[in-house]
Image (cartoon, rainbow, N blue to C red; front, side, top):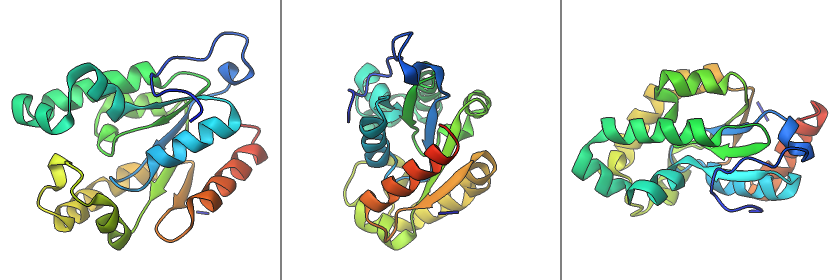
Length: 185
């Protein structure tokens, strides 16, 4: 190693044991498995789960339509608002791949336990399929370029890194839970 709750972004209730714990944020490139891992982790450890992409979709509509109608800058602003609302004590939050581009979001991550979820390009290509992700409409070459551009940011923010390329998700989840338990998180 280098859901329980609905993806609403609601904070745990005061008095819940998890509400006193720093948020756990999953960052990384598109198709790494952040949402799947985050949802399962939250369910297992009794925390609320939120997915910032899902929060944007619930409030503003499908991401491809946001990009087409408003552009990437508006999407990034709405994404940063979703990060701010979701990243509260006691939560597990899966951030969109580009959420780390926002300085305010990076500052908020300083108060979180940050898990970098990685994936190699072959596994990413299988997972992307026809998933309607505007930034990788041109295929794996676009994914590779974006992942390389963002990697230094991801690594600078991460407390721990887990790769999901070939490891079964259940094993990745076990490794992450053990890492968190060792640190009392």
